[in-house]
Image 1 (cartoon, rainbow, N blue to C red):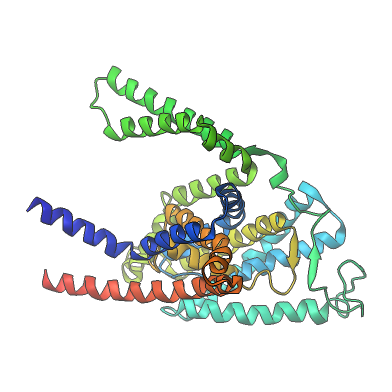
Image 2 (cartoon, rainbow, N blue to C red):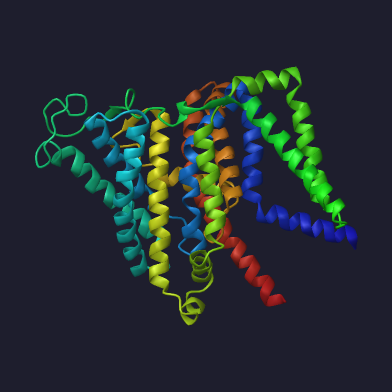
Length: 418
């Protein structure tokens, strides 16, 4: 009976995490086939994690509020790019330029988020497709602004930004000498220092917690002991020459990482507040929320506003790391890639967490890093790896949504049997 219970648990775990397990296997195969040095893969992965995770984390609140995956975060990205072009034109560089981008983007993103939320309230039950179409519509207005209105209705004379005819912004805006690396270059540490000191501090913390419980004669928490052992093991492993060499090679933008930690804590904290509880209640049942005296429409609008503002800030972080703004293309794949990443991490249209966002970004971008080389080595054609990237981005959304629907059918049948 015990073995049957373990088998049932294992079966349920695989069933609930099949997308994540599939991509873990693909990442391991890709790493093996690509033959790329681990130092280069890890360095690229840390870089991508620091610049992409913020946008992915902006998806969590609308999911919990029952609005599904917010493809409309692309509108927040457009708000950020409008301001970045303006700040670049004004010639404000470095940290002041970055902070000005954040300050000016926020009210624009709030307005865009409010209008998006109002529209999504009119299309309840169809939020994902509505936000996707809305993003396409907004992209048309965005292109009208920068291709026609700038230089005609909106006066601007800047040879670095303007097309030679004097109307419209160039396809590519160089942020070098502007906000490029404004955040990332403030403080960088090697991954060795980050892992070593973080593991050491955590180990000391767990040991202190164990001693405290012993002094107070409380029952020992096995998790504390296990975590203390793991942290001390990490400290020891860091000292191995081969591991240390790899970790020293990888540089971590610490300010970006601290901002990501703050956002993760914010996502945890907000659901402990009255507003966060309202998000959960509305997400679980709008009828129950109405009966509890919650204004469902206002709560949903607040969720979209927060998501849009966070996505706008995330796009600023992303572009200062990239250093180049593709005026008409940088925002287009924001929603698609962020949603693909969080789905790979195990999220669904009704559940998403920080852990799933982090895991999803790691797996999604590991595939992005290794797939071209793996395709070249396997088929003698690097372009196949590029096609695989596109397949991953679009295919995982389709597969995940199909699996979510299938899981719901299976769970409903189980409930009927019970």
